[in-house]
Image 1 (tube, helix red, strand yellow):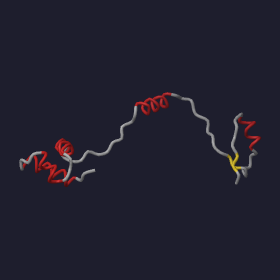
Image 2 (spheres, helix red, strand yellow):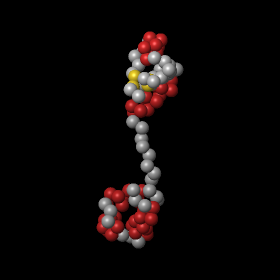
Image 3 (cartoon, rainbow, N blue to C red):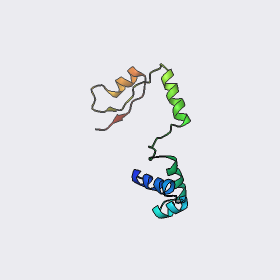
Image 4 (tube, rainbow, N blue to C red):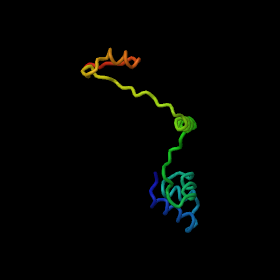
Length: 99
């Protein structure tokens, strides 16, 4: 990202001193399109990551639903509850890890 000082120098060269965009681009070693974008903003715009349509719909659906998801996790082989007792009580398959 370009620094604020460069923005100020480019804007001054084009807007005050009357240099062309092409001259300013060549002088500062940047692309002409970058000069055009620098003239649109007084200082560099911050980075904002836009959410995709999928992310927005997923968040909306999660906010509206009251169903809680089951809390699942991996149990260690050295846990106090045997894996067979847990899987029969919970009705789910569990994964055991070797310690």
